[in-house]
Structures are given as structure tokens and as C-alpha cells.
Amino acid sequence: MNRPVVVGVDGSPASLAAADEAAREAVLRDRPLHLVHGYLHPLGYGVPINPYDLGVPAPTEAARTMLDHTAGDLVDRWPGLRVEVRQVRGGPGATLVEESHRAELVVVGSRGLGGFAGLLLGSVSTQVAAHARCPVLVVRPADQPVRTDGPVVVGVDGSEAAELAVGYGADEAVRRRGELVLVHVAPEEIGRGEASVIVPPGDDPDALLGTAVAAARGSRPGLTVTGRAIRAASPAPALIEASGEAALVVVGTRGRGGFTGMLLGSVSQALVQHARCPVLVAHPYGQAH
Image (cartoon, rainbow, N blue to C red):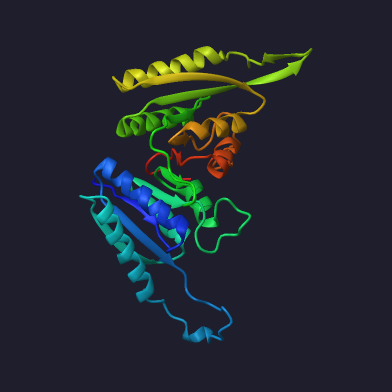
């Protein structure tokens, strides 16, 4: 199945930055790119509407023009790119979640039209990052250029979600011809003037990191894989700091400390919101929540 790379486009700077990164990912994967615009019914907005006259809204010419212009610009910039544009009846978030059932990758901007200034991620991006049925790439704002020369960074904690993230991260590092850096953050406790690592029963941070590095090297011969152990009070700030040197950070949907009812763990949520580079949320394909 030739799954496409799907990106939501609404004409905002954030969505156009996401579209450019989606084009790059489509070329790297040799997949078609689908530009999708999900639109809501224009209820209200100060215009009296007879509820009995409501019908299914039609695609707008303005949105079609925006999509066609975006597609033409991307094809000019990325030779060989195959692009399809579509308007879909439905909310942007729900539309992209539905598209994710058949997608190789869904790409979203950090905040599109309608986002509140205080939110780093808009509601659409948050919804897709949590509920998608395929990997989701969250792209930073357009005023923060995407790095291409840094490593792919993955946080590891021994969980199944982290193992999946390592696999996705290795694939990304191979595509980008870069380095894979696996980071394990060991909690620390400050006492008597010194930092001492807390090791949960049965856990060995060095062994955990060594196992992950060996697995990544064994599955991707020739890939440069580095393990990095960090001592910190909390994993989220340490991984956010590490993202400053990265081209991409890959996170699992929920780590060992996550609550069962959470679709994204607290560390993953923090990275999606605050990482200094694009973040790939490692959803399994076709997973039902």
C-alpha cells in the first residue's frame, strides 16, 4: 500500500511551514504528498441563519486557490514530488485523524488559524498528536527554521512505546544520513551536597541504554548510534534541552510513568509543546484508542 504523507493546510504560516516539511518527508520516503483542508460549517459569526436552511457546505474557491498555490510552490521547490490537494467536509482535527488511518505520516504545524496566542500548539495539532493512527510530525513555527544537520534524538526508558520510538528514530536517521542519539535520563536526588542516582529495583540505567543502542545498531547496520546518559531531576527538561542540538526528536506515546488513560505521557506532551526542533510522535500504524 502506497500510503501518502498527509499535511493539514489552512493558509496560516504554521501550516505552510508544515507543508514544506511534509514535502521533504514525502521525497525522503518516495511517497505522494496529500494537502488536505478540512473545513467546518460556517455557523453563526454574527450572521442570522435559519437552522432549517442549513445544508452541507460546499468547498470554497478561496481554499482551493490556496491549496493549488501551495501545491505549485512545493512542486517547484521539490522536483519529482507528487501532490494531491483535497478539501474535506469536517473539522480540521477530525479530518486529519481520519486521514491517518491510511497515511504513512501526518504532519501538522504548531499553531494554525484560530489558535490562541498563549498556546504553543493549537487544538488541531494537539488532537492529531494524541489520536492519530500513524506517526505524527509536529513542525515548529515558520520563524524557527528546521535544522537538517543535527542528529535524530530519541528518549529511552525501557517501555514498549520507547522501543517503537527507537525504531522510527533509526529509520529517520537512515533517511537523513545522520546520527541516532539515544538518551536515557536517570532521576537524581540531591542529598548531603552530592547528586546520587535513584535506581528502581531491577533497573540499571547503563544496561537499559546499552541494550537500546545495541538493538538499534543491530537492526540498522552502518547507522551511527550513540548512547547518552543524563542525570536530571526530571526527564522532560533534559530532553527539551537535548532537542536544541537535534534535527528531530522522536517520542513514544506514553512511557513507563504514564497513566493508562493518557494518550500522550507527560514527557511526550512536554516535548511536543516545547522542543526546539520538529517532534515525531511514534504512533503504531492502525492503533485504535
